[in-house]
Length: 133
Ligand SMILES: [Zn+2]
Ligand SMILES: [Zn+2]
Image (cartoon, rainbow, N blue to C red; front, side):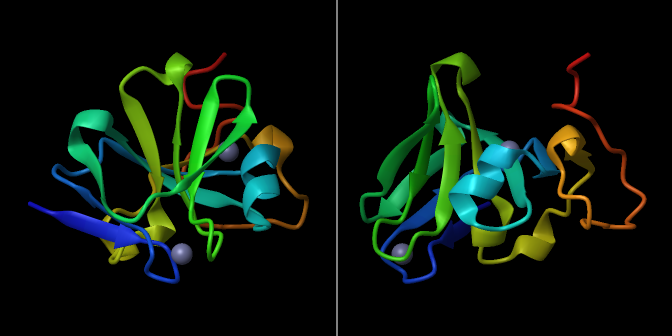
């Protein structure tokens, strides 16, 4: 099974060799800041299952010990990973060729939300990350 995606301009392409382990929508202010969008949707996979297949993404440390990869030409946010995150890597759902394939199961970081964001999709919401107290 090959799941593929890439940036808007086509300079960066990637592939997943296994289905993602999770899919969620992040409302945190860092995702908002790096994207200029009210929320970012993410699928979660592992470094083993993820590969950049074309181009070389730019890196941005949005927080200590966090590296985000993006396209330097068109700005598409692509991945989130870092040493505190182990082998896990998150990939932006909307950069997939078929984002409909992996719909989200929950919303995270509602504590940072913009007040006018209203999804109404009935999915569980969490004030921080799912699993945080
Ligand atoms: Zn691009
Ligand atoms: Zn976030």
